[in-house]
Image (cartoon, rainbow, N blue to C red; front, side, top):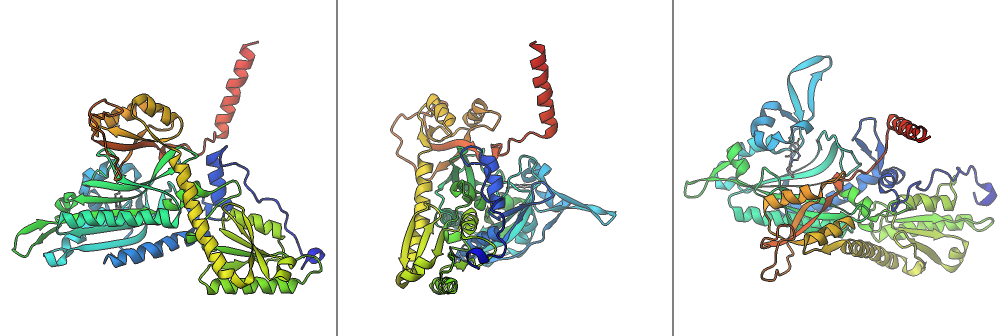
Length: 527
Ligand code: 86X
């Protein structure tokens, strides 16, 4: 077992990343989600296998969110995956722009279906006919439903694991109220839960705000969101959304009720969602050149214990100490496991668990055994400390809390360094070229918003309004819009979006051949 008695040491190849986060972000990301055992690529483009390592993160967030919405008296339900074409198209205006993304089932076996059936891209049209049926009087309100499910959107632009996949997991909440005030309140309560998922669980700072008229969900009244930032790309990304739909859908689907006085009213509705995209944002923000870095709160293994046997030392004693360590930690509510595999060296195990992003590694060798201590190594900072076995659980708990906090602080510091205040167009352009998000005084007019897009359009997308942050500074009298020079109404957060970013700039082999031909032509023609 120890030293020469090792059975079969696997080659220490295949570990480690061939791309650096700073140098080739897109390739780094594709590699880290696979080598970190979160994703396996699948033979249908844009579809990915979520391995247990990713699914466990999703489940931890789900346990939190599900409990919180239950406190709000929101009930879980499950509506079918399929939508008939007549129901999907009932609500034409909302669907129109999205139509190319809808996937259809057209056959069973070899025979064509009489009427094709769509796969839900979202469930408004699936659910709202039943809201209409179930809501009669004011006693039927509020109706507050949520479902955990998959949806399909047949995207054609660069698919990316978690961030933009053709099938993804989410929760979608759909609620109906008698009054606008109740709906408004819920929009913000849900948004606060989304903030907590990002900041408290994923250790990612977000900005809460309201979407512009152009960027809001067109079917609704207003849209709020949490906006995150990916420093390496200089891009913002929408983390989750909470919409007030107003009475638009109630009008279309006839979701009406009668109040105490027998008067007719129309329901006020909300819808809200967060998806497995959260996991992709976490990988992008925290990962490094050694692999994933998982925040302790969402890691299914918070502490990995690695025995470090040495030649003729007391190997059994070391293994027993590892088992005792796992027992103590698990007993204290810490998610700990030991890696006893005999066909891998300790060094290989270190790299492996670093790749998977486990927050804390505990090594136990002969010296530790003799001193009644263990060695703890942090994933986020690589800091090493020796911990006495007598105070193990308490110390480890403190360390995990500290890692969670440090990761959030580090991400916040990086994010804040990428936010620039701009008062003029030139300042705005300069900050944009430095891959920053911009806070700028804004006239909040659609024409100007379009103009900003036009004037910044490049190969990898245009700058756009990300949100108008709820947290607004006081605007001095006479402040003007950075883009139009008109009086500013508020401060807006602007930037480029990750979804417009070409993550993988890979040329196909036929394209490479073409490039080669062009190169040859020019080198010959100059002779
Ligand atoms: C917008 C709106 C809304 C419930 C949410 O953001 C929260 C959860 N839905 C979703 N949206 C679409 O309505 C849509 C519709 C079709 Cl038909 C489609 F193919 C794609 C879509 N994408 C987004």
